[in-house]
Length: 303
Image (cartoon, rainbow, N blue to C red; front, side, top):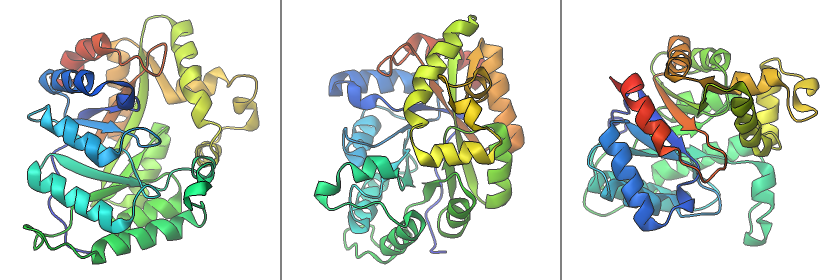
């Protein structure tokens, strides 16, 4: 493996937010500044058809003083490897120890919908492996070009992508998983790799609210084969995916309850082998960031 710069300190618990794109730039700056003050270690976000992810990282880093900005993920179909390498190196030079590059291969139905730009989703494992090799061999001639490459994590669920994360990256980010999957991922990665795990939560005492928000959250993802295949490997069946999703499936993937329930979910992943857990706190809509919930959870999780 190519020598890499040190990993930033992610903290025990971070946050995952898939809707930062829905905030105006001014609102985004105010929001991430408060998240920073609350003490969460790392903020992760996805990349689809909203803001360019490295540009958004610059916004997040510029509005905060301690928070680690982590792409979860930078879509490898969105830019070539030379551009990704240069962008990551620029961010690390500007904000040392506060940026982590998470890379992902995305999903066939999402990439196939933009084939007009010349993208065809095929051989995802080979594509990711070649992309990492191209990053390592990319020419970069600015100040700091003599430094080792930026550290990186791969979005990984299945055994082969986890193997690639162990071989050509510093670890993996997993999404929509159970502690059982976390234990399998740790075994595949070995002790020397970093494992960051996303966990969706609903801070509520009402089970109906937890199930409703959980189903609304899962509906989109369970139309994507990568997630379905992974859940089937974990023992879920077609019956769990039928008729609006089974309660068993929803409660396995979305934890609801009070601060103690959320803390127990974090502990379960940590005991299964996660180094870092990034919480995705769900509201009634995807645009609801639930800042009140983040304020409530911070002293319970970060003290």
